[in-house]
Length: 126
Image (cartoon, rainbow, N blue to C red; front, side, top):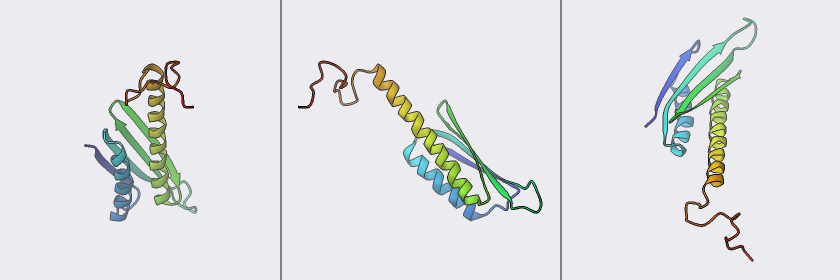
């Protein structure tokens, strides 16, 4: 089971923020059951006092021995959270596709016991 740690700096912590983070986290947890830990850090960067606050969201996620990191910034906190989780999900999908490609390259059979279509003895569709 994965543990979720949320740190909020320079922003008032609210139940709505935690709910939004949990919503996106649970979506990932449904698809990736081997997640070990997830740390979400929310910070408000205010470079110039006259301008809008820029919220930055940093996510550190570990699955077994792999680590995924995403940092997104936006003037809207909820958009920054959404974009950060979307970037994490995109990199996880990309890594899974890469793993499957490597398995197809080195394993002659798929999970159903059928031979690879590149095998000359594999029956071709007519």
